[in-house]
Length: 179
Image (tube, rainbow, N blue to C red; front, side, top):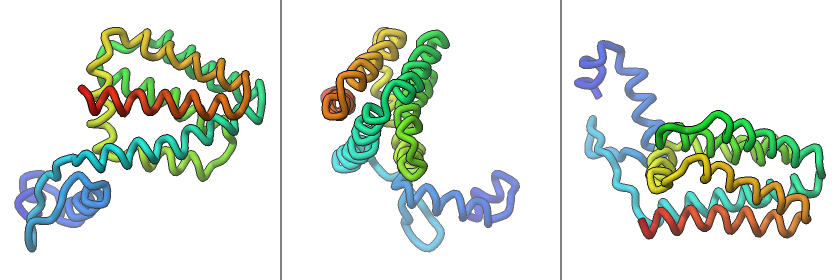
C-alpha cells in the first residue's frame, strides 16, 4: 500500500480505502500485512452474480408488466436510445446493455431494487465478466435490439415478463460460461 501511494503520489488513506473496496467486491485479497493480490474469478462468483441479476431484474420485469404501458414505454425508450447510439467497442456495448437493464429496474419504481442493481453491476468483476461476454457478440446493434423481446413480454403479462428476463440473463450466463 505504501509503495502504491508513493507511486501515485497520494496519501495512504485513499489507497487503503480503494483496496478495501476492491476487497469487498472480491477483486483483490490480502496477502499479508500490507499486500494485496488480484483474485481470480471463480465459477461460483460468476454463478452468484448471474443469480443476483435474475433475482433483481426478472422481478423488476414482472413489476414493470404489472405497472403497465407507461412503465413498459420507459424500457422501450432506453432500448431505442441504445440502438440509435450504436456501440463500437465491447465497453460501449457493455454500458448500453447496462443502461437497458437498469431502465427495467428503474421502471419498476422501487429505489431499493435500483440500489441492488447498481451493487451487482458496479462490481469491478461484473465489468470484466460482461465485457468479455459482449466481445462474443458479432453485432452490437443486434444484441441491443434483442432487448425488444423483453418489452414484448412485458406487454403479454407479469409471469411472461419474468420468464423472458430470466431466460435472457441465463443465456448470457451460458454464453460466458461456454465461451
